[in-house]
Image (tube, rainbow, N blue to C red; front, top):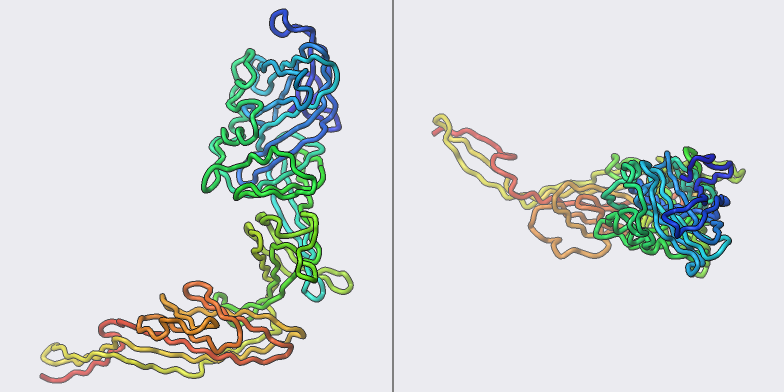
Length: 513
């Protein structure tokens, strides 16, 4: 962006050349136009939508004008800027400076010119906005657990990838978390043929009306949320300096503190959050999903605001706190810090969008310090319903015994031993093969416990710990094991088999006629 017949840009990264040319514009009503070059950007703001290849750019510069007509040329050769979205506006001295019209150089699809009438000479602040493609971002998180495994230092990073063909110096980066459906791709709009040359009144330069608010721009771009139109009108509103994250309907806006140069083809890593002493929970999980014979250690932390010792929310900047907004998708890598300050990598995971107050769990590997032995202590079959009948076959009768209904009960004992020096929080998950699982747990005996319907009737109410249903077939119970403790857990499950079917489990005996 910002290219003409004069040198492309300075070493300071100036990419937008605004210049004033001598000569009349249209007829004799325009005065002479002097060539004036602009200083480097005062600032630029990038609002990057990661779910679609679209970025909103706002550039601010101080333009030097003279009295009379000034011609400003804006070019974007070799970039992915959408020309239909370019918007020029004057931020100050609106009573003395007017945008007259916009023209396109003949045969070019990478440039346009704005004609400005000024009643004053001096510097005026201007802003240029547009959409571009080729800029994306990716989040990742690094956590360091203390020696006691009770606190976690968590740092969030955002890596910005700029393949737009343009350098954005002194840029403030904002990230929009959410999914949008873009009807027209910015990269396609950026390569459309050149528009018809000649002057056009302001507001008719492109498909988007120049000077409208960003919500109008987005509306014309047909950006839709999953359940309706995306409301991003707040993107144009000035934020307080201490606000780093702002909710936009189902979408969230992250503002990265500070300004950085976002160079073309050079990924930039930015710090999005730096949170100290995040409460860390260490627990041990055993599940039938992976065999159910060995415990796995997990770290868990929640995306919620930090509390002080009195249980009140700490007064922290958004960059130093959790629970301000959901956490974007990203890789989580966790380390353990020894007394010597050496670090050991313990595990990682790819986390999806983490809502406020939701949790992140990271598998840090198998743990042999907690063992379990599961035994089948007893088994019996009751309430048998069978049918007996004879059938003639080759001058003999065959006597059939068909098993119709029966109840089969299994009694289990689990011996769990903790070799941990501290209290070990455990979660044990068991699967029961039935379409209908009736659970008698910590909430009391269910109403359908004595039902005669088919299913698995699981009795866990004698377990000294919380019991909960996970899904249709899985049930979980929780135990806190003291250091060196051996715990015995007993429970039963009764499978009520119904309508087993003919000639299943049958005994056949032949008798003469």
